Image (cartoon, rainbow, N blue to C red; front, side, top):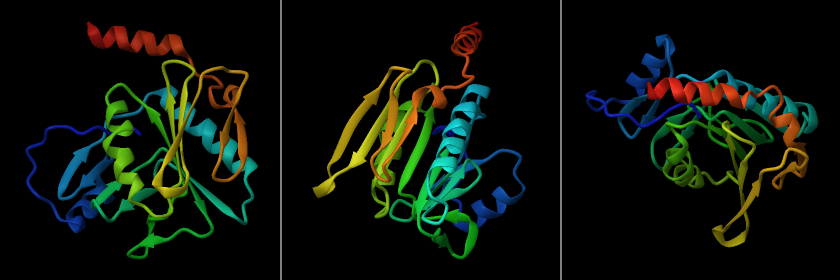
Length: 205
């Protein structure tokens, strides 16, 4: 996810105002219960990681059973009134659209977020809590772009979530909700960790 909660002077906005703004905006924003929250831009590594996961899933899972979406497809979380743009979403069956808008869905089974320095705390805490309110949501994958590390939360019975961690390139990320394994070497293909270090040092200057 490339967004982050930021302090903003914008007053309360309706959903209609937000959606109209998104139609012409140069950069995406989230919407949370009346507040429009600008999203920060993503790095090339962020883009590669999301793209690698999207390609691996799109090639491996049955097209007639699942849909895979990346970046530009919006998610609506009704219980907290959140519009957001997960990095990758997997849907079982057909997409369920919010208010018949084909750019906004409501029924992801799995969500993948690529962590960034500005959003990792939000993605791990509040964002995860928001996603849990979706009845269809069963798996959450968090990918570190600074090193080989993938965190996985899989829903079990009684609203419990099983946590798994992957940190070796020769292992595979096993999606529990649709029984698929993706090698971490595929997830991190062409990702340049030295570039992340350079970006961090530049930001400190």
